[in-house]
Image 1 (cartoon, rainbow, N blue to C red):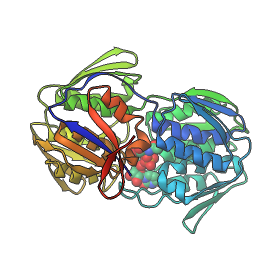
Image 2: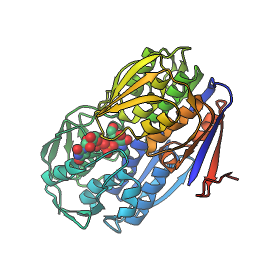
Image 3: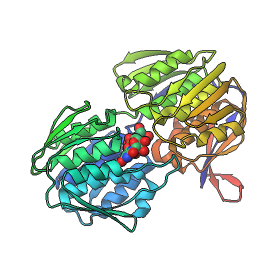
Length: 430
Ligand code: UD1
């Protein structure tokens, strides 16, 4: 297992420019969408992160041929060789569930392992399943696998009981090749859902209501080739914005989509940071000398993203006063709080609320990352914790952040990647 170590000899003030990568949560459904056609799909601005590798491993198993060079992915599934997404891959990455809809629509059959438990609480896929059933699929659960079959899916009206990002994506993809019209109500509004729809339209899908709660899809017989640029990663951008706010830094972020960052920017402005739009895709953030406390409630887009909750918790530990974070999307998504407490934070968890009393000095220690965004939170904590902070199990971080240590190093952070030889004897990776 690898680790990251951050050395904080004196307080950092992050300075410089950072280029934000393509969105992990947009590229994964886009790759799955390539299952809907026998033609080639080209994706650019692909983030070079572990989840993309995992998705490509799965796609190869299903029959895809691809090459990935310099953030450009060419992928083609001439024939679907296997309809099965094995447990090993689904367990490594829940988003593997995104092949369920496309496989069923293209091949008439999908066998996808149930994702099961996850470090951030129970994450069921019942809405994916019931939606596909409404499109006419026969679905059974056997031996931990979802087994779905349908000769050709049939359009239907489906209202999601709850907003679900990958659930909306799975249903939109399946409906593209269904017979007749599908109306999806209470769809997730996340920009990654819209990005997928834009790609599908380029492939020949007929979709109305992109970016709205009601999406109408007129099924077509087949889809064709397309080229598409993946949108910027708003969570990576948010993480660097917090890094600057936290360290009274002065950062320029390039390659961002400011409109997708509104909820995050509003909270950072309240915290005392100054943010200015430099051009269409660039922002400058200057962190304030004093960080103000505030309350945050996570919500589906355009609300405050649950994927930024852990990073804001670090910021709150450095705010003068009490802040309350309410997590409404996932239960048990506060594992990072215990690690922050080990660094000296004053945090109390009460059900879905975290009460953070600041400002507390943090001191470096060895900590363990439990999920992707929790890892990002611990990296941020390392920037303000005095001395050395060693973040273990960073494979979670590598799932979603491209070259994070290189990007931080360029902003003045002393950080290195270590190889953990499992007896706590951490040696520097060559
Ligand atoms: C996606 C994101 C993830 C983000 C999350 C919420 C990807 C690859 N991942 O995950 O980074 O944290 O959105 O913004 O895009 N639910 C059900 N039944 C279902 C599906 C979901 O009850 O069938 C519930 C979940 O338990 C959760 C809520 O709906 O409480 C939202 O989950 P969902 O939007 O589906 O999350 P993901 O798509 O898995």
